[in-house]
Amino acid sequence: MSKVYDVIVLGAGPAGLAAGLYAGRARLSVLIIEKGQDGGQIAITDEIENYPGQTVEGESGPSLIARMTQQCEKFGCERVSDTINEVELEGAVKVLKSSKGEYHGKTVIIATGAFARPIGCKGEKEFLGRGVSYCATCDANFFEDFEVFVVGGGDSAVEEAMYLTKFARKVTIIHRRNELRAAKSIQEKAFKNEKLHFMWDTVVEEVGGDGMLSTMTVKNVKTGETTVINADEEDGLMGVFGFIGTIPNTKIFEGTNLKLDERGYIPTDDNMHTNIPGVFAAGDVRVKSLRQVVTAAADGAIATTQAEAYLNSLE
Ligand code: NAP
Image (tube, rainbow, N blue to C red):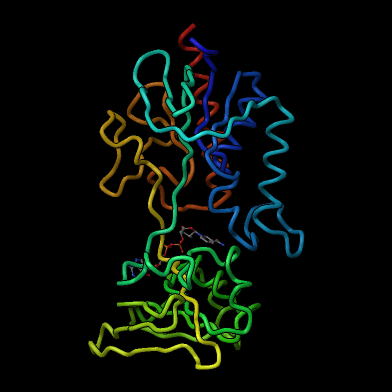
């Protein structure tokens, strides 16, 4: 059998990196497995204003994450880039399998996060990357001086819409209700932004175009009236960004004995314990009321201290 780590952390977002930092500092052998780039959703967030201590003007998610990664590695976390596609979580040694091989750990901290929920309209898949996007940081510059629409009314939708006003000529938030869910402080900034407009009580039914997105059908949910919005003739195309919440990255746990709730999130107790001894969950992937960098990092720290207590109980 390959090396058996004290702790395997699955995912290198704020929760996973905090878990790794605490494990490294506790002199536990720790492996962090990440399939993509570090940071999860924060890697595609333009501005972080509410992480305590993050006060450097204009500092972005990626720079915060780069420091977290560096700090983790300084304390001896091992890293591997791999995609886990099968798990065996019960038993004294947990096994995580990929197409490359197997990883073994006495404990596992699941910090796999969540990904963007699709808007759910007709044509969405076809126009993904051709006008439809879920990442303003990645795609905003394609829409320099164009008109773009943002679907959603939460913190993400409003913050990312404000970011898009730095690029687009006009940004319209399409929200299914007539008031935003976003925090009041975020709303105040948004209502002052002259490039930002609002289409209330409205959902997107269909997006279309000839190759690139240039038309969209929206429906007023109160009156039932549908309206076709076409891209400005000179532009020829427009953008639609969806920010309507997230779906947890828990597909690999379906069909295992790890308990998931009806939406796929992992229920834990206050100390990040899942229903399986030695298996913990941290960050956006777990059932919780506030999904932020600060709560994800806190979860990671708690998960590791609990993993350490579990390891001590085995001795
Ligand atoms: P969210 O808070 O769940 O908001 C999702 C928004 O999308 C809501 O306005 C919701 O409408 C709308 N929506 C959901 N399903 C929809 C559908 N099928 N069709 C149309 N609209 C739909 O998600 P989020 O904004 O991504 O935020 C996720 C978490 O991250 C939250 O806890 C948030 O506080 C946090 N976050 C924080 C910050 C920050 O503090 N700076 C930044 C980003 C995210 P309703 O309002 O009608 O339900």
